[in-house]
Length: 215
Ligand SMILES: [Zn+2]
Image (cartoon, rainbow, N blue to C red; front, side, top):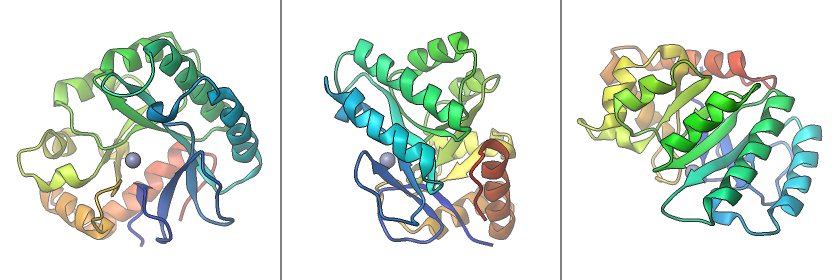
């Protein structure tokens, strides 16, 4: 059973979802494609047209993203909202998850979730927020991906992992340079669940929320 890394910026690792963003992708490599809020400009929809086409016809595009909101960096919020809503609706129409980047914008996500008729499954990557925030999102199709913050014993990530429904859990290395095994090992200690069971759980979790399956 392989320990899937569902969000990494490091290319060429098996069983991982490489964050290609709007870059050109290598054939046969599982990727997420989308426009990060930091990369939005007035031309974003031209890039997005290409991403839409690629994502629709290439089964290796397993997710849309990272997309989302960032109040600390990036263009004005109206543009961020426009781009996020468009990307979310494309992910929903393909039946694949959206990998979320969300900084100081919990309210914007809630606003979207409360208004959206058909939201995609959203994986909040690098989850390290307070557990109350996580609980507020449980009525919606929101999932939590845990990364290097888990290695800090008193982190919000570690606290929420322990309380989080297991079917909402994913793991990632993001840009940490860590090996994914070390994240699974840490989660295994925190949850008192063997790594192999967690690996199986993550694969089942993915396959339950996506038309494009992993194994
Ligand atoms: Zn990332």
